Amino acid sequence: MSTDPDPRLDTIVAALRAVEEQLRDAAYDALRDRVDGDDAAAATERRLLQARRAVERALRALGAGPDELVE
Image (cartoon, rainbow, N blue to C red; front, top):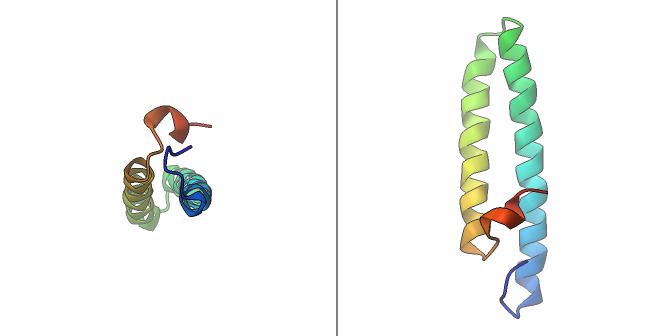
């Protein structure tokens, strides 16, 4: 986790990890829909991936290193 002594940051990091996982799962679902011919799913997938990258940047800013992003 983070090296910051503030336990609130650990709570936020855990919440962001949960959101990142939800975004990843939703992006995979959109990708599957896209492969099945749903043209609108491409835009949804792009938005979800953009949001996921933003959450990953937030995790890094809070001290969660790259190794800690993968569970």
